[in-house]
Image (cartoon, rainbow over all chains, first blue to last red):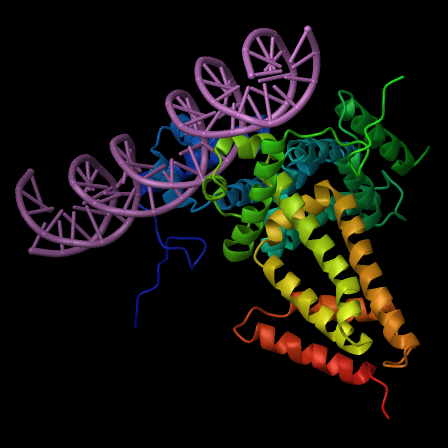
Length: 197
Length: 197
DNA sequence: AGTTTAAACGGAGGCGCCTCCGGTTATTTG
DNA sequence: CAAATAACCGGAGGCGCCTCCGTTTAAACT
């Protein structure tokens, strides 16, 4: 019988050497910033340089551009989902909801430029999409429930509907006031949601 | 008043110099063959070489890979549509229909590898898609009508249905017998269509 | 601590993309 | 037919992609 590994959280993960893990994490971090700033078409060699590793190292960890994009994408999605519980701890339920929606919009904003790469990704790996949207939906749902239970907002709102309203922001025309507009929309939604006294 | 150009068929076309037109046509021809054989990811420099022109010339005529793909795509579509009238002249109506459907399948076959580029193309230029499908729909419709009017096939079949049946071939799993399968499907469709005596 | 080894590194190299511009050529004008 | 000119040609060059493999190093073993 093979002895089990008691160290790793996820079981099917082959342990990485310390330097390898450092490099990998640095790469993801740098890539996230680069994608956000210049879109997913940024030079991978630049990313490797900024992370202080050779291009070979980047390609060993992420065999293709899409792999890297996927990892960054998923990481951000998870961050967004876990922000929900964090916000719920720090703010009142309604403020937590509002702030979370703002972050959601901020997240979407970084995805606007990368339509094509994302599309390729989604069609070739649709599980990513469904898992991702599941995470987000879960986060929003729990925020809604908490705020609803506490009497901060009305309770006759479906997660799906709100999610839909938020997603529509994605298809808003590109413009300088995009961010402002989307924040106004959130304010509007919150006004509608909050219970009057 | 500016004097009108009586030479060109399409009015809004600025006349090309003779050598330019030669090169352009040669490029499209070579590109069509190359795309069919090795998919749309083929090296554009190879295409230029095979066409006997410099890479600069290729890029002047087709500013991006997608432009070239689009032109080739449209050309083949038009060829397919015009083949319908040609076939109708040479064969009996039912044979014309059958042969045309075979060619349609052949056309689709060349498009299997290029899913991504085509998808990008479609989403960024959806008119191409609608115009294209209009063309081939028209072709099929006229073949159907002629054969129906002549009593060769039943008349209670909608163009849309047949088109749908044919398109389903596109999503058949890739396999060595793909071509054979699709031809069997066409045989089956024709059997169903033909009137019995 | 020293040895071993397999995992990880990183950059050179070959290829394709696309741009830019000095040279060439079809076409127009006299 | 020659000169003028605008259109066109083509390939060098700079950059990024990705692979391959000789070198380095973390980690396991003694």
